[in-house]
Amino acid sequence: MSELLEQLRRYPDVEAENLHAVDAADRLILDTVQHWPAEVSVWGDHYGALTLGALERGAQTVRVHTDSLTAQRALRANLERLAPQWETRIKILPAAEALHNASLVLLALPRGLDVLDEAAALIANHADPQVIVHAGGRIKHMNLSMNQVFSQRFAHLDVSLARQKARVLTARAPLTQQPAADFPVRSRHRVNAQGFELVAGAATFGQARLDPGTRLLLENLPDLSDYDTLVDLACGNGSIGIYAALSYPGLRVLASDHSASAVYSTRSAAHANGLAERIEAVQDDGLSRLADSSQPLVALNPPFHMGNTVHAGIALKLIAEAARVLTPGGQFLCVFNSHLRYQPEISRLVGPVTQLARDPKFTVVSASRRD
Image (tube, rainbow, N blue to C red; front, top):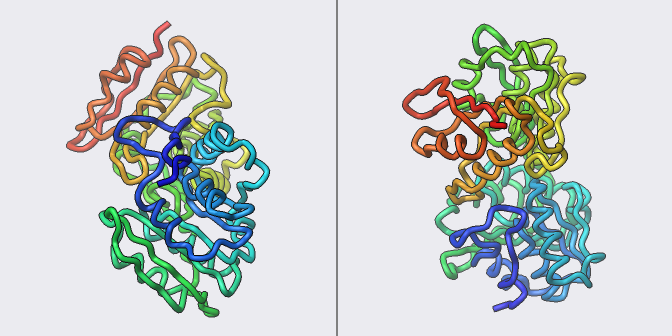
């Protein structure tokens, strides 16, 4: 067992005793490789286990693509702390550049089949025709549909034996006739007589759907006519900012998400709705680009999954970020799964809370930032 991998941390992502920076799937992917080429491509590395593991095993350089800015920063933090001598040997790149002529791709299996198909299609179209893809995950999060996704894009697929409740899918020989890509997708929605269009990539949470929690928030959005700026934190497909900007023509939206796919989706939806001049979407870890006590209005529909784990840590981190950037007396709008009972934490981190709406699944609240 590699001592280097055991020292990996999740920072700046949420850290807790039951959250780990490396797992059995990462180790099995690395152990499955029979020959290490000089250059390796890594897709979806969460905290650097595959990247640093590849260098430790013999790769000279690693090209990395990951959708999450938080994951990129965690990888960099682990590199600086544990192996600064390798800094010049790692390149974090857009997808096509990371995969260009790749002969070996190590892939952490994502949660969604659409995301996996998008990755498989990009590998098949950009990698070397002799590419070998090792894609690993925990068995409880894998299913036969993942095999089918690879079989649509590659002529050969092998499935490893299980080890420590993990398994690896190995794909070879990209098919010359690739099925058409399904993304981005578009959909039309209407809330309170306001119509709008969403556009989304495969890795965007909710894709182009309007999830029921966000709909409840939009249906009960308070009067925002006194505000000139809305911060759409963890913007996802941009639905909150899009709806607010259409409803209030004087409102400017600052949207951010750790996901590059979400930022792309929000920008695309802003353009589709004629809002490109009023909605700015950037990739950020929380709201790190915004100063303390600088914003009068923040909206959030927080995620409750961290990868495949249900955990409140990411939501609490984002709520704390909202509290940090709000001006005294500033308004925080939030929707959350009612059973998660975030209201006491919002009161503690932000200030006095008012419930705006509640249904059997979701609760919408407004909080005023205490002085």
